[in-house]
Image 1 (tube, rainbow, N blue to C red):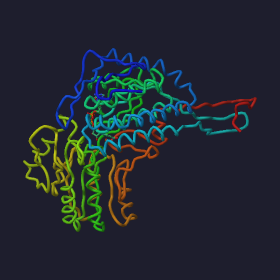
Image 2: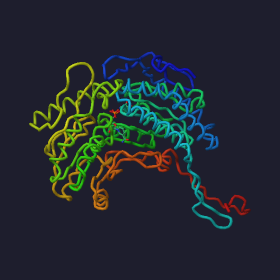
Image 3: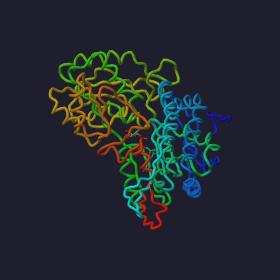
Image 4: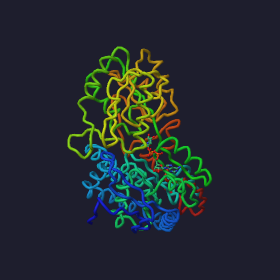
Length: 481
Ligand code: NAD
């Protein structure tokens, strides 16, 4: 199938191309050039997409799970067949460097193939002669997916694959900042997925808000900021939609004094700055034991100086720009606040002249615990290094946040690190590594980092309702052996 990935972006509604009378502009964050326009769906078009998904639902849910799994695996094959175009387009619209685009598109393929092996079989919870109780997992109906701009492809697949395997149909809306890869995904799948089963609509925040109140959407699966998550929870309550919310974080990384400083410095750098720190689970507060603080900060700064920030499309670039002007302005404001507070910059802090939303790698030396760079989710390459002496104190500080997405502990003594990890209030805590994700590992936030789980059977289960069948069968024909 020949598809031009670099022009003509259309939505996919009921298996067909749909455009709109209004458009949103996609901007390359490395150059600030408008690279394309994407349809800005009207409310009537959202209704059409939801109606198509609703019509497609009975036949889709009735298909054997093996057929749905095969189609989700075929989605992975189709992405793989267009991988090169996806990688280039992802860098163009999102800004990330080549290695990051490879990781994201490769991951999208893996997720389709692995989620396609998952299924939720019925469970017999009670059984006697002539009577049994069975709990089955049944699909919800039309699911609405809403995604952010940092990993537009992978996070869309995290929703599409389990929703479809579980027997739901879907209407998915990408971020208005990064609609292009998701629109092309819809286009290349028109002959893979039956009409109406997967609808891709693009538009602004209003479109997302309409989805959260739509009476025929049974669930919203959302990844984005905590502020938007709160709004979604409120507006979804009108129709008692199921919700999965994957939200923001302010992840602590705790570095104990027994670490190999040089080796750990490099790993911590990437823990914090991967994807230019536009990463929900980036290490956002680095707590370093006083005994190694100076050596580690020197090693971190030395390594950071070797990392190239630039246009993701250029060879040799390690970190791309900030994805959009809104986030760029937020970071500029954070940096000027840090300066006005007199905080000490070990590296970075100056926005370069010229085009592109570039923020340099910025490391701040032991700022007060209540400063904005510590308390807020920067969602950009501004990292506070914080000193600690005492384990009890660092655990208290690590947990002193409204968030609870993830965290990490670094020590040669994994048993001691584990004791600390168990006391971090977060959905995932890594020990001596970070960012291990898998279709088989449950992921979700505590506190205001979210509600519910993605990935693993637990994540699949969130795309279902439980149905309990209590059966008295005097003829004993249906009672399981
Ligand atoms: P955002 O909340 O601004 O937008 C996310 C999506 O929500 C977009 O598609 C947007 O159009 C839509 N939206 C906006 N207002 C809406 C409304 N009222 N109703 C419904 N939808 C609405 O988030 P963002 O800036 O795109 O993404 C960055 C945030 O996402 C960060 O906080 C980051 O930590 C978080 N994030 C979390 C995870 C996770 O898995 N926990 C993963 C990636 C990003």
